[in-house]
Image (cartoon, rainbow over all chains, first blue to last red; front, side):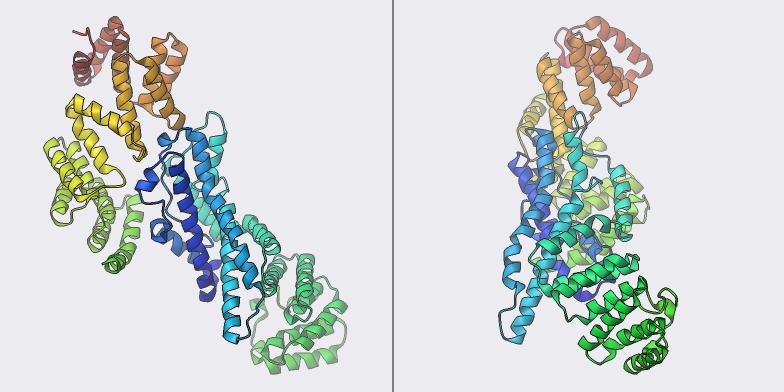
Length: 338
Length: 261
């Protein structure tokens, strides 16, 4: 859940969210105005001023739930020349604006993808800019897809009554509130991930995302796959990351975990040897030694396992006090046969 | 000035959210919370919400008193519009007109409450009302409710004038977007006049309104068609069950339908 995300990540998400919601709501209002309904314009909604569109509660929610929203644009269907068709177009305008914005972000993403300044501060600034642009593009794609779901009050729910002959657009406010509760429950249980997850993964593949960000996303996906006990997928994702960076200790470690869960101890050992060779000899590599101890034990090399366990404790004494129950499936300690 | 308004608005938000949540749950504690948010922010929209909550929990008279008092201390077009609409509900047309004039001086309420108030205050003079609804009908910046009301008023003028094709167009346009009981009864009139009794009955069945209102619409419809025998028969039935409603309908027929004595 985003509720547990760091403050830094939240700050990186905020600009994309504010721009995305503003453009989304403004597109609804502007298209309504173009099609003959001036009520949104009178309400001040044909504007790119974020304060006109942001719902304070909806903006706050992005930090508590993995979902946010703007103030809905109220349109008057009686002002449209062809009410159903024009309402359909107005409803589609918001998600389309988000897709367009994501498309427009591709060029600045390309420009910031490869660091070509030499000063260290400039490099950091470019990396941060690239991260901001990437998150903005991903958020806008997510907003577009999420809003097309046919659940009130999302835009998708306004589209289908316009396509079915005899159906009337709009729904009772009470029923809409029921669906809002359903959406909040789905959001807080990460159920929207089923829809958004593949979109984000697809976007990572097609957008000009820098290698370091792509690698981060692969590690997160591998971590999720291990938690979901999809070990073959975790192994494949770690392999993809190694294709980007063949000296990534973390990628070797994740692949070793995935292979360990599949009882492929020999290959897991080779991955851990690589992880240890590419990582600095500090607390960060303690996990690798600790897991290698488990793998060596499985292979019957108890003496070597004991040495690795001692080395892990030297690097990170807190491992001695860590209860196995606190270790998720992505950690050694509860592998098959343990 | 902008910064000060932003700060006071931000400070008022927790009270506003809590108040709105409690108002949705119909908890009376919403009233002091919304009043507090209004006092801090001075925002007319929040004021309208607060007065709406007062009306729901303390009654029309208390809400009206608070709204008129607010117009002396924290005037805004939104509050003027709401105060005027409350005055209309309280049968105080003079106060409503005063609120309309004061609201117009303060500016426009984008949500259209002043237009709505003008719609109701003009009703006492049929000529002014007819001109106003024609003007409203040609505008494209009204809230949906006011568009419906203007369109329905024009449709009723068309009924009295026997322009049934225009009635069909207006009612059909409303029904394409929203199920509106008066529009269903207007379609009943049109279909009955055209001899399509099955379609007329279907529209009457769909009109979700109290039986006496349904009967009133039918009486007006029959009178507009010139079927005075049916009109009298239904009017007598209505007089038996709802004499006041029957009296009001007959008054309208006397004023609007030629040949009705």
